[in-house]
Length: 54
Image (cartoon, rainbow, N blue to C red; front, side, top):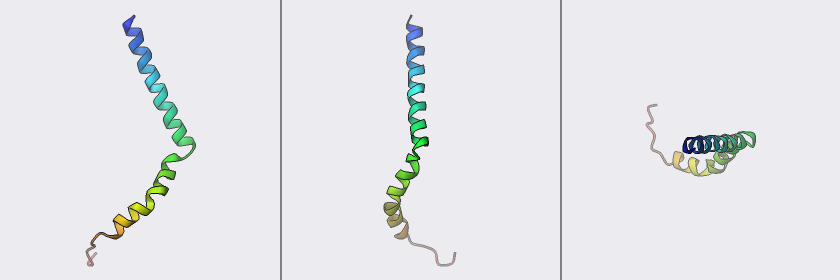
């Protein structure tokens, strides 16, 4: 009986993770997050010292 409960919990976790990644994929949430973080990333990138020889 405990083996069935463990298997059910594992299946439920995988189903929840699949549902979450499916929602992220369908609504393109990863790129929307990167678009929101782009100004912060640009500030960090622009402050870097560069080698003028490159």
